[in-house]
Image 1 (cartoon, one colour):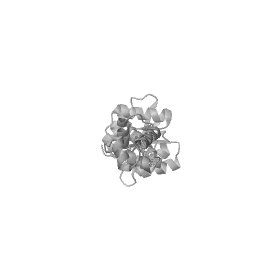
Image 2: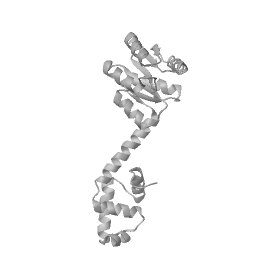
Image 3: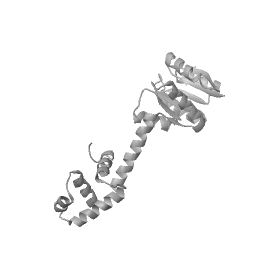
Image 4: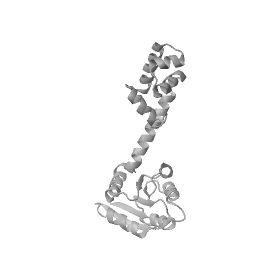
Length: 211
C-alpha cells in the first residue's frame, strides 16, 4: 500500500488532491498538513512513501521543507506542487531533493501519472518542464558546438547568415572562393548539418542570431 501525505495550506486544494488520488488502487492518503510544523509531525507519525508538497507554504516554504525532509528521510519521495513554471523554482526544487514537479492547474490525470511514475521510477517531471529542459540542453549543446568553430569559420558563418554568397565572402575576407567552400564544408561537418536552411535554424536555436 502506497502511503501519501498532502502538504498544502489551502484546504480546498488538499481536498481536491485527495479526491484525485482516491482513484488509485493500493494507495492511502495517510494525512494532511497546512504548514511545515504540521508536515514534520505528520511525517514522523505516518511515515509516508510520497509527499505532495505545496511550494508556497507559510513560514518555512516547500523547497526548504523538502530539503530538510530529504536529509532526514531520504527514502520519502516529494512531489512539488506549484503555480510557478519558471526554471528557477524547478532547479531549486531538484537541488532540494524533490522527486517530482507538477504545475498546479494540471489535470487530475497528471497527478495520477506523477504518483505512478514516482512509485515506479522514483522521478516525475511535468511535460512542459521536460520540454523546456530538453530545449535548454539542446541549446547548450549547440552553443558548445559553435564554440568549436575556428575564428575564421565563425566569420564565415556570420557572413553566411548575413546572406552573402561564397564569392562575396571571399572578397570580404580576401581569401579564395575554394577556401570559403572548404570552410563551409568544415562548418557543416562540425555542426552535423547538411543544408544552409539547417544552419539558420541551428544558429537561431543556439542563440547566435535572433529569429
